[in-house]
Amino acid sequence: MPHPPVMEKALRVKKVLLVDPDTRTRSWLVIRLESMDIQVVEAMSAAEALRVLETTDVPLVVTDWPLEGGPPAKAFFQKLNQEKRTFILFSQAPREEEGKWFVPRQNREQLLEEVAGFFGQAAGPTTLPGHGRQILIIEDSPTLRGMLRRTLAQGFPQHTVREAEDGKQAFSQMAQRKVDLIITDLEMPGMDGHTFLNLLKTNPVLSKKPVLVFSANITPELEEKAREMAHVRLLSKPADPQKIIAEVSHLLGESKSAEVVGP
Image 1: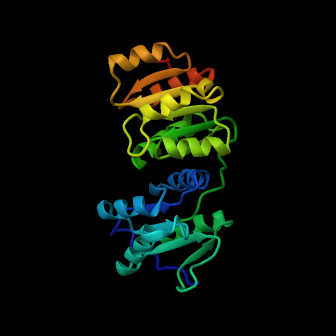
Image 2: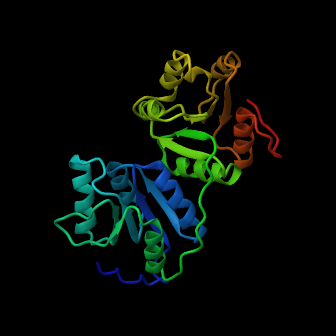
Image 3: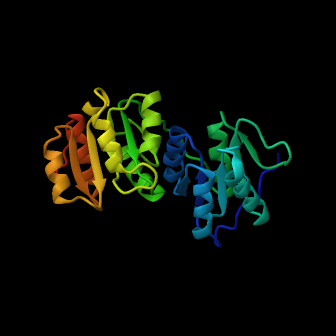
């Protein structure tokens, strides 16, 4: 399929909206694209992507297909077409009814080259994130998820970071894959952090997992409750990245040079 025209760099910033429900694929791409000085705005679903497009100007969209299906996915692709937005289908197969710019899902390096070419630059060398422990972020804000993931990638490049938008998604992920550390917000739509923690305590295995509660709503009552839970620590938003790294290091039992800051 033909390549899209190279964007006039003087007119727009180098920014990509990346829409993909797979956290590991998204994390790999974000690390690579940001190493090329390309800003990335993330979305895990078509509904979240629609909200991003209402408030953020992005010259290029990279999206899986068919996402979750249903009305949100249909509305998302309709908006892309109606607004004549340039987008790459990064999927197992192209949409049959349209001859859009398509990159097969297994060709990550090709995708990087196409995105770099769109912005008039060359793709950088391949660097793969390490594989060690599994860290799960539970946060409804894509901006904060991205900040946490980048901080963890810098402090713990050997570990794998996964994401969930609320407690329900988190339990679904933990039923399929192991987790070694949980970072959770408290106030979220769907299953909030309070409900998630209460349910976590009832599971004899998961209740032993270390948890970092990262929230702007840490109260004295919550601090008292955390003292009774050996595997839970609290950190107020906003926090310096070094404090986040220090807390995660403490919970994982890993030595870091940053000072550990407790609640």
